[in-house]
Amino acid sequence: MRFNPAVARLTAPPVAVVQQWISQYDGSKGALIDLSQAVPGYPAHDDMLAALGSAAADPSALSYGPIEGEDTLRQAYASHCSNLYTTSVDPGEVMITAGCNQAFILAALTVAGAGDDVLMLRPCYFNHSSTLGMAGINVTWADTLAEDSFMPDPEVIRAAITPGTRAIALVSPNNPTGAIYPDDVMQAIMDICVERDIWLILDETSRDCMPSDTPPHHLLNRDGWQDRLILLYSFSKAYAIPGHRLGAAIAGRATIAEMAKVMDNIQVCAPRAAQIATAPMIAHLADWREANRVEMVERGKAFQAAFAQLNGWHIASMGAYFGFARHPFEMTSAEAAEYLTRETGVLTSPGGFVGDGQEGFLRIAFAKASVDEINQLAGRLGGSGR
Image (cartoon, rainbow, N blue to C red; front, side, top):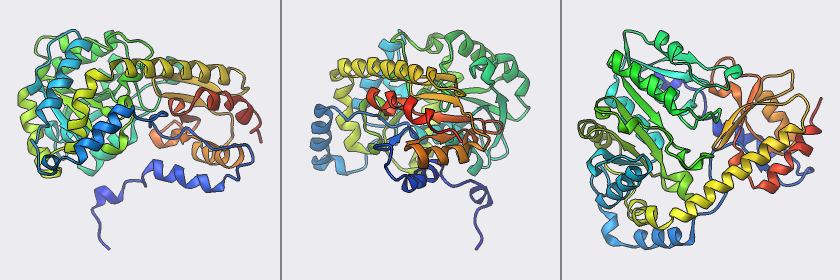
């Protein structure tokens, strides 16, 4: 059989690989604690569920919708981001997508083509590197280091830019490390993009789970941001609806028009029922979202407290959804994660899945678990030595 080599080179979906290990656990330590994937550890609000049901039953939602997204959702999200970033985002600068991964695909294909380079930070979000690889876009790397809490160094990024670089792709809060990049660092990286005439693609999927409710950056306050910046977002975390596949991008109108060309050839439009349901929920569920953000902060504190009791473990970085922890085992990260699943009933994701040099780490999605479950980690992992 002859397959597309750009696809054949890809590894199996990492989350699916990890989920296969669950069958090895016999339940002897209690219920499985799944910390492997960044999905909300709480249900959607009842009003959201009711809105989804109503929209799904509306015959008008069964037809194709606008490629760029429902006007009501574009307007609601633009208003929300205008308030969040203390600026003015026009609804025409918003595109609605089928999840944030699709937003990245649209952005990447809009600004780079086969043979071009996109610079990513390592450790990386594996779906971004896979997306670029199967599109024939070269991935180049700027490493972040555990001793720096995996914070990017703008000068390392500058040195890694090649003549073929078309964009720098960042994720903040970061997946897998959890690191939250401060505004001055992102401004410095944006300065490099302006200097080198390249794009900054910033994925903010976990933005609503940050420890602070202050604006995460001021990139949208810069003059001419529309010519250099694409912001990506997911409604999955904030509204607990990952299965409905709803994301968004903020970019200049000219960029949105180009992204719409890509969207029309991939999916035509994002799921309409989810768009219709979510539009009024952005304002309606503001207090609920804030309560969940505070809850995520408490889960982060519990995660730190649990690991403070463990010998040989070290949290190298954390924030929002994730902790990136150094494990104490003399084995690969995949072997360590599989072993912990089998022996302790704690499911994590191997650091080796997110880039070279990360075999000593595990990605732990602590935000998926309750505080009670997180409090069990010290006992389970503390008894896992070999």
